[in-house]
Image 1: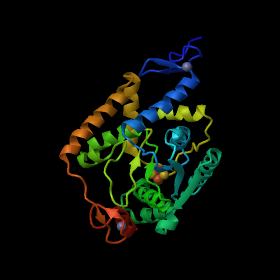
Image 2: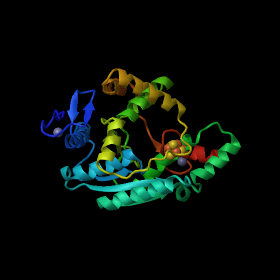
Image 3: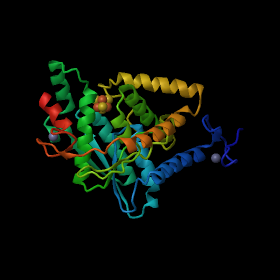
Image 4: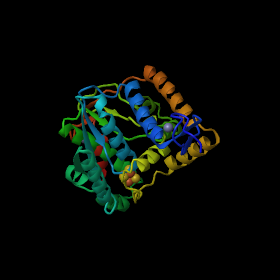
Length: 308
Ligand code: SF4
Ligand code: ZN
Ligand code: ZN
């Protein structure tokens, strides 16, 4: 038997190549929770009395995050935890995910709030997809979905008086986004995206990403080991071709050079810091159509909705 290199007692089941550790189930689970605790502390994600809304889609990452935060909530005795879900209106896909999300919330004793595209915008994503196929706008369902979901989360979080939104972006998501921003030369976005938002912007609930230092593979393993039921089917509209290529490239690099994802992550942090000093902070005004915060005159949501 190979013993766990942390406790030295129990049998190891997982070799963490990037650190050389061999871990037993219990030490693995604790290490993930510790990584989340450390990221929360390092980026000062939470205040002791925050009302934290966890964005739960029903997939493995968001449900792992909810379970981990429910466990470590004790560190923040006056904080409260809620789950928020956006129902984009994707038949046969989101309905199942919402049912799974609700079941997990019940198990954890966390209140669950849902908002739908239909209620907020008058269209379900399925309706939008039918229209854009017809209009041939060149945009993918994900381009609509991403912008509309972001707004919906913010509206729902405000509705329940949340002070933070926690999303389940993991380390892989973070470095993929970083690489995509390099590919697109989007330095402004590079300076703005990160594990936590330190700027307070009116009407925008600050977002934090407590899983930012956990590999996607290890989030999945966490979900399986904790017996978390999650939705496994992919979205029928998933089409982020370039992101998939970047993901595959990073996975191949990590296989050959264990630890390289963490190296890229740390480099991204340094570059972001350097950029923040150079790039002026964004100024938000109110959208002339809907009144929500926006960078220009008319927000992206209204622009997209006008186009359909
Ligand atoms: Fe929305 Fe695209 Fe994600 Fe499907 S894959 S839920 S369309 S962003
Ligand atoms: Zn152990
Ligand atoms: Zn608007």
